[in-house]
Image (cartoon, rainbow, N blue to C red; front, side):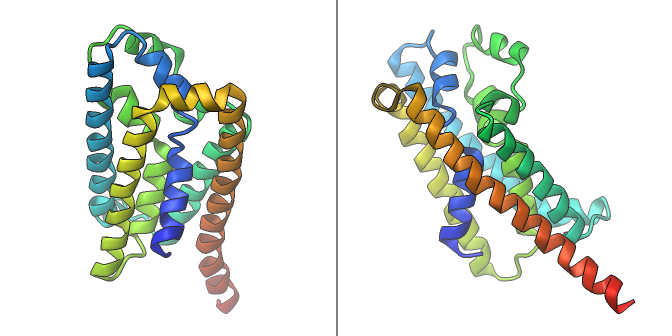
Length: 209
C-alpha cells in the first residue's frame, strides 16, 4: 500500500471531520487556551497509540497465534462496522462512545487521552487497520511510510480540531454529515478490500488441497 493510499484510508477511518460536533460538545466548558492544549495533547497521544500498535502488531499476532489472513478478515469486519455507522450518521456508536462516557467527559479537566485520543480518534477501526497493515510490512521503507502517514494524520487532527469552531460554522451540521458519509464509503471499500486480501489466500490453499 502506497503512502497516499494508506494515509487516505487511515484519515477516513479516524474521521476527524466527523468528530468535530462531538469534540465541540465535550470541550465547551474549556477556555480557548485549555482547548488548544487538549488538542495538542490528543494529537500526540494518537501518534503514541497508533505507533505502539504498529510496532507491536507482529508480536500480537504471534502471541495469540493469529494468522495474517485471520487478522485481515477480522480487521476488515471491524472497519466495515465503523463504515456502516459513518454511513448511518452514528459517529458515537462507530467510535464506541457511550452516553456514560460522554457525560463523564463533560466534567473532566482533561479529555485529551480519553475519550478524545482513544476511542474517538484511535478507535477499534484505526487500530485494526494499523495491526492488519503491520502484518504485511517487510522493509524499513514501508515502516517509514506508515509512520509518516501517522504523523501527517496527527497534524491533520490538530489543525482540524484547532479550527473546529470555524469549520463547524462554515460547514454546518449538514455539511459535516455529508462529508462523514463520503468518508464512510471510502472506509467501506477499505474494509471490503481487507477481507478480500484475507480470504483470497485461504481459497487458494483450499483449492490446492
